[in-house]
Image (cartoon, rainbow, N blue to C red; front, side):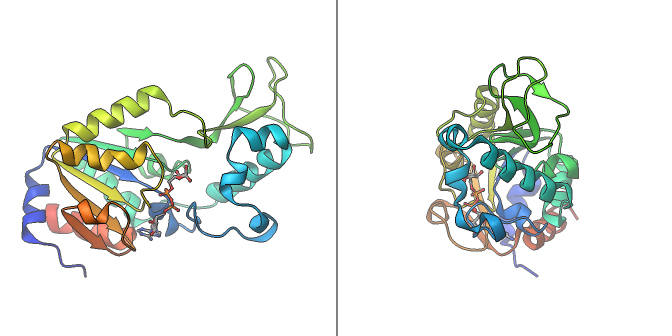
Amino acid sequence: MTEFPDILIRVLRQAERVAALTGAGVSQESGLRTFRDAQTGLWAQYKPEDLASPEAFARDPKLVWDWYAMRREKVRGVEPNAGHYALVEMEKRVSQFTLITQNVDGLHRKAGNRNLLELHGDIQRVRCSECGEYAEAWDENGDMPRCAGCGGMLRPDVVWFGESLPRSELEAAVEAARGCQVFLSVGTSGLVQPAAALPFAARNKGAVVVEVNLEPTPLTAKADFFLQGKSGEVLPELVKMVWG
Ligand code: APR
């Protein structure tokens, strides 16, 4: 059982505006590797950074397509964990709760969070790399799936390294960070901008910053509370202590 400082319990209980930023660590207990965990099998020879980029797609579109097809399959096979459900409960308990995620696995939506900002897109969504049309279905018969409308190559609807984040989601995330009373950063290494700047934006506006992670990150020294542990254990315990 994690011990929580009384002041943290009180601050969360009284908070009307809370924002949470999540990273791959939240999905780790659902069985999904984090972004910086080593890859296995056929993909062990590649680093995600070498696959999740426009350059990689231009160089070898089928390789990139197959990597995402494999990840889509993995995501289809996993369920949200107790950490995801704790964030759903938090959204029910706090009058203004905004969930900002870097994850593309769709597990927060599957768990039931509604006010959700997917900064890096959703791996289950596929769009045309030429005309931008979303594709509901495509044939995976071995060669590169193509857009029914314009014949362009299909790609996952995620933000690749070097690409800009969806503007409306990012603006809403910054607004939520600046306006909240408590900002939680959960299961993220805090290495990738602009998401990594959100907790600092909250802190600069006087929010209480709470970090949940297995290990320290660049945020830890600036956080008001560092709850070290698995998000699937810490978050449910925190929600129970604060809201019963
Ligand atoms: N509970 C809490 N934290 C965990 C757990 C867990 N069960 N398992 C791992 N972590 C922590 C790790 O300590 C690490 O700090 O989760 C973090 C995962 O970090 P990354 O793998 O870097 O994932 P993330 O922070 O989401 O990456 C951010 O970078 O590569 C891009 O677009 C990609 O969205 C990704 C972004």
